[in-house]
Image (cartoon, rainbow, N blue to C red):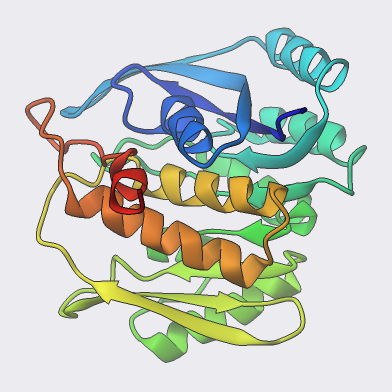
Amino acid sequence: MSKLQVLTIAGSDSGGGAGIQADIKTFQERGVFGTSVITAVTAQNTLGVQGIYKVPLEGVQKQLDSIFSDFSIHGIKTGMLVNETYMELVADELEKYPEIQLVIDPVMIAKGGAHLMENQALETMKFRMVPLATVLTPNIPEAEELSGMAIQTKEDMKKAAKVLQKLGSKNVIIKGGHIENDKWARDYLLMADGKERWYESPRIATEDTHGTGCTFSACITAELAKGQSVEKAVEIAKDFIQAAISHPIEVGHGQGPTNHWAYGEENK
């Protein structure tokens, strides 16, 4: 029996907590076969990002050609896309496959504060990448950048989601973890048909959250590839990341990664 195949287009995290490594771990846990196109190699650990080294554009194109010439891809997730030139290349390729579910995690800033997307790339993200998305998964700072508005309340999240949907993304999930003074982590989903849903989970007091955004969007990608609705895919991803944060694995000496096998252990 052929295993469902998915693709992540993102940067590599040598520390293993985010990026390509987090995506592949999540795909494996959710029962899909993960492939990858690496846009940049980062020297990175739980203490921060020590270096970013872009893969030559020819290398990115060759990776894309290799994947699509051999594998039957049912879901694609994008993460760190570096700059507008890389985004244009990826957008040109993805436009050839409108039937494939596409989850865009508009990665801009690492947990430690390092910029993972060059500033001039914002317009390209908004007008080339976002219109291709089945699901867009920004956190609060990313949603503020993309929407051009401040987000401080639940109503702000709803307004921003509508702005982002107007840019072309069919569905928008804004992750509310950056809103302070709240005992709950609240995420807001605006669906293509106008239906909306809030996902809430207890906020966990921990610094070990490196790679949460990558893991969350990778889980959504896997579930969409398996035929789940957007609403159900986000529900599973919310439970998956909650379990991953709730069961720390305590590696490294800084902001540690999440536990990618925790959800599977909880649901044996």
